Image: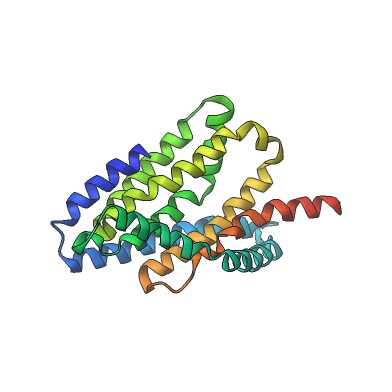
Length: 235
């Protein structure tokens, strides 16, 4: 959270000295970076090397997770609620004019990006189980750097992504001893795999505008938990 605060502050300061064309180009460049981060994580979950060749796996998991996740997310309308939260923060703080531009987009996109991924889960678990925050610190450094560039184009909304990330990672840390027995390496890999696909979707939205409701597909990240439970029953 501290790293995001520092990074966002630096980005907001930079934003004031950047012309719009620089902000647009940086946003497209960041979109490409986010897309390739998502692609790399997704390919790790879907491709394996066997007999000197590539084989695909987890195709059914991907389809089931994304389809069910999208249905549940649309039913709850998570993205609308995130946007309403962003608008509420914007109104309460009376953020207007140029500072208010892209506030909600910055809040939603950065919140999703910072919360999705294996480092958030594994780092929070390590912190809660052994008091070792090293992975969270590493993630914080990465998040802080990303926050600089996000805030330099999307503004102060990125700053307030500390709220969902604090709740999300904080809850995992506090409940680590209860959920650790149910999280094996395969499950964590699958959670990261599905999360990477959503990260790819965020990158698409950053470049092409809001084409994919990534917030409404967010429950897909939890489907591997139930998928593994069901598959274990038939082993």
